[in-house]
Length: 330
Image (cartoon, rainbow, N blue to C red):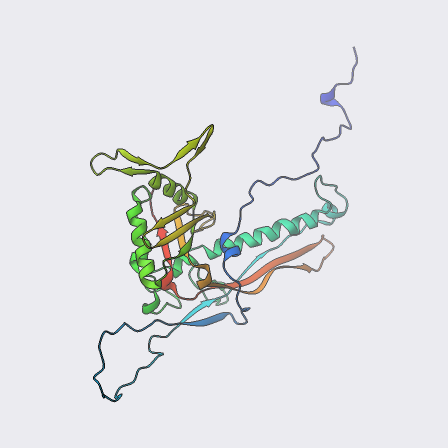
């Protein structure tokens, strides 16, 4: 018997939800916490760091006149970095913009601009937490701003090296395998950080997912020397709920507030989940020349197009106060 079947039916409409869903929505902890400083007006920007003289326990002989003088600027040093430009370039065709009707979008181009603006912010966030070295534009390679991974070094950087007096001490940089990270190790990093800053306060520990999980694990259980038997358990449950997380770690020399990030040590399209930076945000500064502004470009009859770009640079006022967790293995 002749019949009209759904599988061959002509003119069927799509049942398409009037929305486009994106589950990859990540925050920007560095971008949101680092204070914004004076706008960068040159591709290279500089600032000064200083340190106090070593304390003296010598006395002064009664009646002795002053015969020597001190240079208050003798410990002063110059630090530098370059700006960097990031950009995204949305374009849609004339028909995609004016003829096609896409579910969830009032305008294909408007949706493209919104999405690419978020991606531009992510580019900035990933750069701040990266191992990028400072780089000057030579017509072949672009300007790059030094990321936190290269600011927190105990050795000289390849470009615009930090003066030796202001480099992050090796004791403030831990490369212990993640499984071997203990409370004692973290406390020693804090100890080194305190020795430089004299601040027994709260630091923001921006950390990848694996490092964050390790903090919860190491605080929850304390291994014995002989057999790694759990002898201390600090996790607790209540009723039908179970809590097993650490959001703040306090040691003898300060407190680390743990803040998750998916963009640390970013390289070759992937982040380092073991990475972490303990920072005092007030000792950093983000210098924008412009922030992810959209600029329409000429439509040559192919469809609307434009560019979203940002120019920025990272200043670490004194790298002595940084700390870094950079395990190379789990």
